[in-house]
Image (cartoon, rainbow, N blue to C red; front, side, top):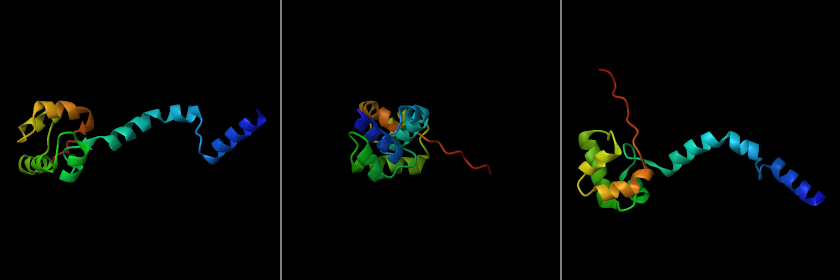
Length: 109
């Protein structure tokens, strides 16, 4: 029993084992970081990133998304992807949880 306690104490001190209280304290930040790492912003991602991150989106469709964005400006919603040639509602539905839309504010003239 003493060996187990010493082992756990060494793991905590070395940073390899994080106490549950520390995990709970950082859970909100972890969720935000996790979303940022697992979701793709369709307003800033390049074609290669879109093709890798999204199901049913190959390089050709990813390039269509980027071309549409460059021609028409940033997407304002995920549903606007349906306006891109070759992207349908089914593709949007299966990728909805992987997509975020970060709308940049327009600079005042």
